[in-house]
Amino acid sequence: MVNSMPFDYVLISRRGCLRTGARYHTRGADPLGYVANFVETEQMIIFNGNVSAWVETRGSIPVLWEQKGRSLKPKPVVLPSPHTVRR
Image 1 (cartoon, rainbow, N blue to C red):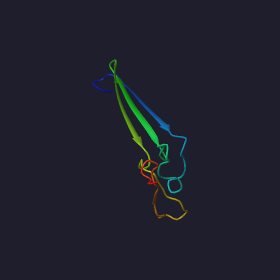
Image 2: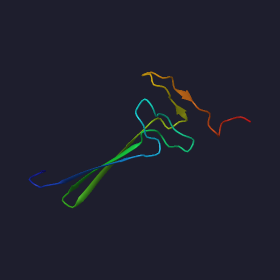
Image 3: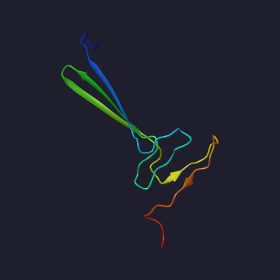
Image 4: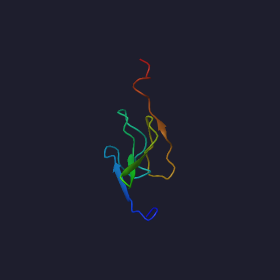
């Protein structure tokens, strides 16, 4: 309650399904720009007929890289971009 008036709080999370996986098993981005473990979270407050919203996104760093291996500290590998490869 705010000033004795009720309000609604809405929380919505959308998880990407193209590069899912455990934190240490799927990382980085692919050539199409999809990052690993992408999540978009939207928070909304509805009060006295007004709606206020906030959107947050998270995921791996959006550059071409990957990190493979079962150890806790696998070395990251930066992949060549198709736009920067010299022919």
